[in-house]
Length: 314
Image (cartoon, rainbow, N blue to C red; front, side, top):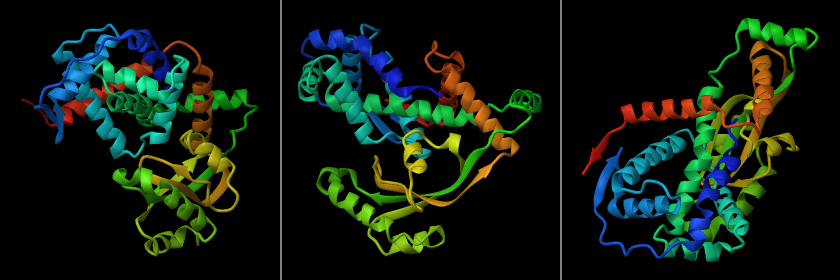
């Protein structure tokens, strides 16, 4: 699995010194649309901010390079949203706070520096969100299709005393107490309280949608069968520590969420064995050099999105 937090820290560290010594950015003129990506507009103001950000990294900062980077980023952001794998705003804020602290600055001081450099904190955090979310999508897409052959499975089981490894199979639902972006600061605490209170009354997965209909702005998403190694890192501890049929709550980009555990059992079929072995391989690969297959898969995925996209240059 791609270590997103390590990747974003490594990437941003290269810009740290420039951020700290950066000059004030240019005053932006009225924005005009420069490109439209599947209905999402990229403006001249966006391009100017990305140029400022590229200058801080001492990389090519012409308008064309900035525009193409923003188009790629828009495609990634749209795909992350489509498959519901975005990191939460809390995760982004925490990453920003760590970056600030690593440079001996408060988030407020770092925000001022970004504003003076012409980047802006919102632009920077948007970049962080994509950098943290995109590896999850790539890993989910290609990790699950990178299958072990029957020969590999048999070989690994021979090394495991001819036993298939055992893992936990979950049937899950996602319960979302929706928070509109414009109201996040005002009602997040209230919604978290409502979500927590509902957990003790949760009637089970069969009645979940009827139960959700009794409350305001609550949606239910069936996640289906999920083996323990497949559970996203943000949710895995909550699932493993769950007491009863629901996990603890998390504040995400969609609202306040928890998972309902419809059922769980120990399994040792071929799919489970493959998943366990593959996760072991991924764990062993952590901490090494950047894995070129991951970079290749990211490029392949992005190329596919570009071919399907409607991109209009203005």
